[in-house]
Image (cartoon, rainbow, N blue to C red; front, side, top):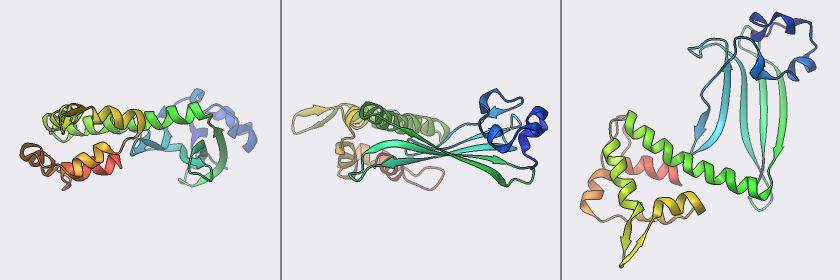
Length: 198
């Protein structure tokens, strides 16, 4: 077994596979923790690399939700994979992390907040920050039938579908012009926004 991590951690060669898998990844020599991959605010994977450019993947964690029969989040399934010098996952270790009700609620709220943060950062990277700022300001003080609501905050705090409904049924010409703006990836602002919040 020729694990990639052996290149910078010769002392691990004397360990059994179980002992290697019990080693704290974060204290290994030369390990660079990569940027986690998220989808709609949910962490999907995280890589540990042997180079700063993050091209030589040594260890990867993948995450999936554990749901009960009613669809409530009860924990996270984590699969840790150690790669050999050929890029094959030769050691795998499943880990289950249970969540209390409070931890589950906090995790879901964090995911929705991460969605909003992602949209703001994507706005900067796509050169449409002013549009994203406008939309979030508009939907944070959304007025319908004389009632003002913060739809962005309602989405983050309790998963309200009001933001989604407001975007879908938008009839303000100025807002529609922004929502129909095409991003460099070919999507409209509206499609991108709806994908993230639904």
